[in-house]
Length: 146
Length: 146
DNA sequence: ATAAATGCAAAAAATTTGCAGCCGT
DNA sequence: ACGGCTGCAAATTTTTTGCATTTAT
Image 1 (cartoon, each protein chain N blue to C red):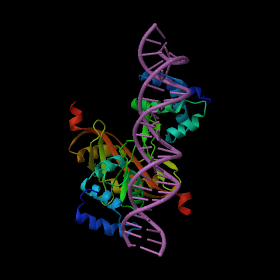
Image 2 (image 1 turned 135 degrees about the vertical axis):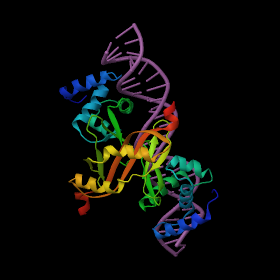
Image 3 (image 1 turned 30 degrees about the vertical axis):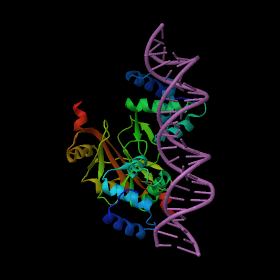
Image 4 (image 1 turned 180 degrees about the vertical axis):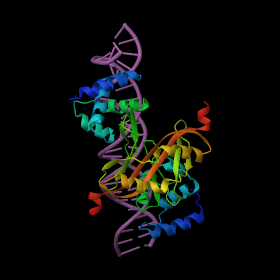
């Protein structure tokens, strides 16, 4: 297991116990990686960052799911075939992805909080809208030069 | 190949020729399915709708990609592991997905056109924003009763 | 002590690729 | 006739699952 940040670890341990999840090394490893890397990561990237001593890939899949179910991670759509995850505790934001190099930037949209209600109003068959996924696609300054 | 709608077929044939794509049975089958089914479909669903006489699954993958590259289809994120596609010619809209049963409703968001510009303004490393993906998650009336 | 989590290996599912022959232009 | 498309089969890649063992509470 890689070196972990003790401060974060303590916080995560109690967060996990607050949910119905055990504070296991596999989960702490995942949360620690995200705490040090503020961008969405796929399972494969998580595995790479965790290294060979890190959790098995099956454990990563299982924990990404349980942590998402308990609201500690959120699933993010970057337009790739495999989905990525991110810490849910980060403040609400969206992503702007470069179609050429894949670079991801966080963006905050002021209208964002009102969108759910707009959607609910527009869909007569739905009783509630609990969240949304908003990702932008474009070209970063480096790639547009080429 | 399933029965196709002649009116649509003619339109699609010339649309394909307008791009750099041949009007092949595989592509016409895909476009025809979408023309009759106004909702996002995954490759597996496309295969099911096309039936055993329809295009091979490898062809579906290849054509979904080429049609998307040429702007005739758009890739849609429904929060599932396999991505879905939709006809690009439909007017701009978003989706509201029921977290319980997976039902998908189209929604139109009035603020939507301005979002790209907001995102661009917020991301200093980016030179252009060409599009976005906005999907809502919630519960349909049937599922909320339970 | 108990139920949950883990690693490993195997299975299943999803996606991609090579290639010989077919078909649209 | 040419180059792009197609089916088929095989190879990859991604995700899930079973099970014996370990670990957190």
